[in-house]
Length: 407
Image (cartoon, rainbow, N blue to C red; front, side):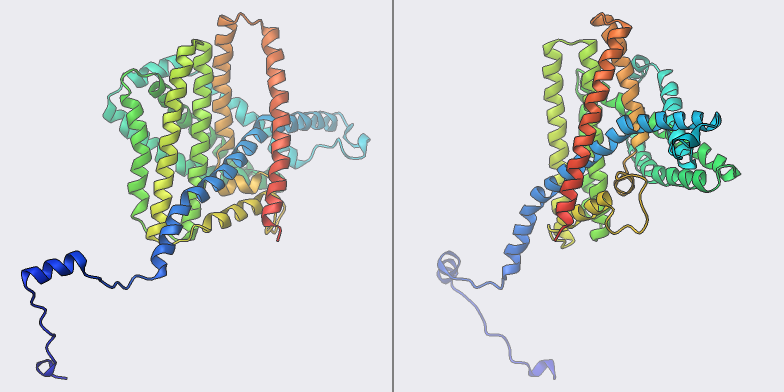
């Protein structure tokens, strides 16, 4: 139709008094629906759903970490015994149970990897690295920290695939040249990733002991920089799950690094003032990490119209990885699939822990006057405690996971 023939809208010319009366006392209709309130309710439910999943995921990370600390050494010892029995020809005397198989070579290689990596890290003086970091300019440290975070994510995604490739080659073609290539690649990866984490750990140590708090502020700003990086990107449930897994691992690493830093500082200077100050800073860092995660996930789900129930579904996926539900092939152990899903670098983290525990043990012999025998006894007691913790936690996680996925 011709726009000229359209009926003109009625004029709403008002006097000053009628305008003020309508603005102050008028009743205005709106076209808001119930979906607005539902969206707000979903927005406010996200922090609780995130913390439920993060708590479950954190326990899974602890279980996977303790697996390498406690179970893997026992498996390496069993593999060495079976290799010895096979070499001397006594492997078949126990019904075939004492025979060395190709899968045992994978455990031996992982044990050798940890030993080689720890040997290299032991040659790096923590004190020298500490003072080198303190002497650097803030802008240089900012760039260094940003580079470490990027390469850490790349290494986490690459590491488990490299280990799986090594396992496949060792069990299928152990004497092929590709097995040697896989072993070299895994060795380079483990050393490189451990060195990066060692530098990150030293940076946190400097930040926790710095008097001007400038480096601590720099580390905290990185948490909120992630909000700007992720909030305004388009996400679907798949990418949100990947982001959630990365955040779970990041929180675990932060707790582990701060715990190791506290242990080292306690043995260096075990005064109550140091412990209180460190605890205050650690609490402040963890709270900032939690708040940053809340804000990030709340707005990611809000801007991408993702329901808060997605985090419950993510928990079901992790539970399926632990129990093996939905997996066509058998896992190496109950941590294999979930470690690959989360992107947890078990071996580099264990190497970092061993390096700092060795440094703490050195200070304990100086400050507490421990003999070598006393130190060995304490380490054996600690190993037994960690082993019992691993067994209990592993059984508890399997029970919880089975209840999650059961109808």
